[in-house]
Length: 98
Image (cartoon, rainbow, N blue to C red):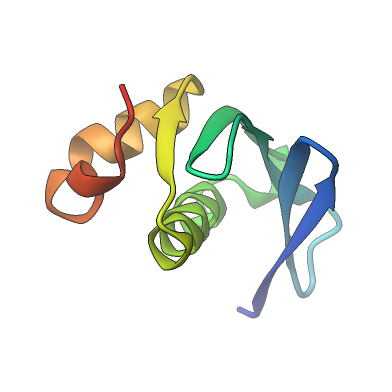
């Protein structure tokens, strides 16, 4: 399985879009860029044909990697991202803004 995640920036908004070779659907994680140091994870969705493939977790991991690399904190308004951060405290504790 080849999973590709692309980040698209649009002003104060951005999205991570995931595709998997051989599948038509996609996964999307949207964020709002509140400041240089703070991003808000707004919403995560994965199309039905990709559910159970680890796409949402891959999107969350990419967000965490990017935030860590840029010194940003994440406010997890999205229920999936909040749950991901709760389940991975060792990986995400330093990134939480809530």
